Length: 497
Image 1 (cartoon, rainbow, N blue to C red):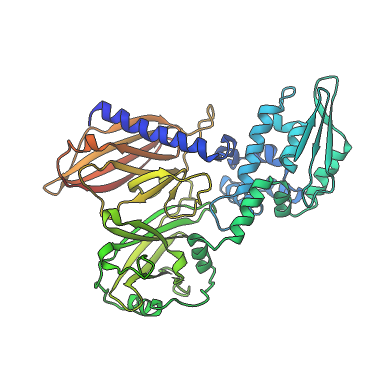
Image 2 (tube, rainbow, N blue to C red):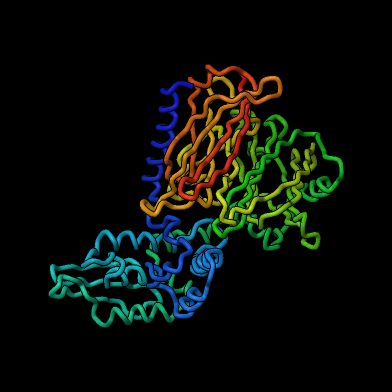
């Protein structure tokens, strides 16, 4: 692979990420993980403005980083307005406020969030009106739960804006609320409207999968599902239709393992219904292999399965996403051509990795058929969402003429460089061809000092067309230079001209 092709590939991915991130209005840099490093000093940072007295005492009593990390996760979960989703809108907005305060309210030697205006912004959110003169500012609020609607700040002789007594009353009023109520009271109207719309909308596939974990049964089983369920329980798999299964793993927001399972079959094996849509019927179950007393998690509601029409490549894809405890599971899944048609079933053992142990680790590597901007309202629990991108995985992992090679993955538990507050990662990709059953390595491509933890690489089709046909593998090595730790991953594919 030439240097020119390498540069084009890296720039293409970097430009796409930068452009999408800007258009998606992603949370400010303050929401990065270093803000929640499990150090004793965490309680002295911006969160001290919202810590309750009992929470502060409890955190001070913790002795280990592991205990503090678990406690900090629970701290934000108590304030999460949309539990069960990967996103915590309150945490994101809180750290955006920290950034805004530090930019706008610099007074004296301290950070902007430590000023009176910064404290009100962090605890109370953005005012609906802010009237300012050279020597005075008046902030107005009109949200439910606020006992004080106006806060006045006056500039003193040192040039610092100090709030009048009513401001303290506003903070006290919020501290009287439980953490979630206080969090909700401080969120801007745009986020409240988004949450309300989400609550009023039909449940997403991920939300329905979460209900399955909680044991909520669908109102009624669609026709054909009971038949499929019985077929998946049989010892011998059904192969009347070819069913491809592709699991992948990443870390969920709450520290559990986020499992995505793709079920796919060729388009010609599924008959279209009267409205022209594929008439596939799906069923899946997950049983914890190390907990025989636990009931299986059943996914029978057809709304659990997110559909992707990949018919241009000959596939119909159905995916479900679910957050589970790490460990071994048995997956049983099935698909049929309508309620009474041909069936395909599969049984597969899965081992969901634990990403919370503190060791440097990687998610599954996604070999993507296509990538596109996910959009500003993308649901991070959607099986096809990867940060700011929407990725459609390759089912057969075969690249033909004109196909780019794209792959993506997450890095977890990388240590931050104290000087920059970001990871420092050396990432290498070694492209290996299988010859007579042996992987023949090429010189690795090394990308030094990477600072992002969502990584990906693209090699354009013009370069791929120069490679010989056959089976290939990308071996990935990530070196954490701060922690002196390494982790490896790989993804295989084939080239067919």
